[in-house]
Length: 162
Image 1 (tube, rainbow, N blue to C red):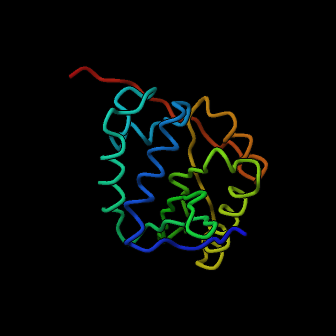
Image 2: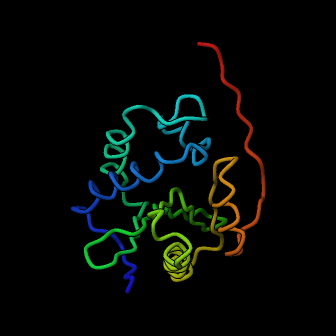
Image 3: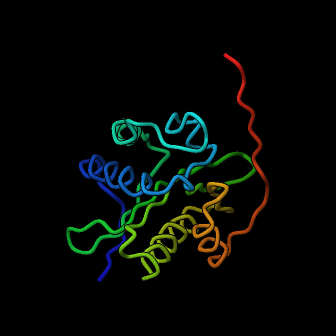
């Protein structure tokens, strides 16, 4: 049985390793967010020290972010990082990263994890849920569309000299 819950600070190093191991399997996960955080330098591939950078990022999440996990006993099946934002005009959550163990995909783990964080968002009064995904991450796109997300915009980038 899968248990969905919020991660504790002591679990974050292991969760960072999980993220690095899962996302490194597929360059289609890379998006502008990975360029902005220095996890990709070209927008197409991962940096060589992905595990170390993710570990560093995970220890510096701050109180505006939460990490939800899907567990089967002691086994981590999936995780997601969520940003909570409240402004004078709108409250929203951003699913910043989501990684599901490939061995458990299409088994409901991702759907359960997404439902878990959306329920928390509703409880916190969030009006919107946003996420971004790599341009060619078609499996993730189909997953999120099945769960009510739709394309709202496109992100353009340009590498500058220097």
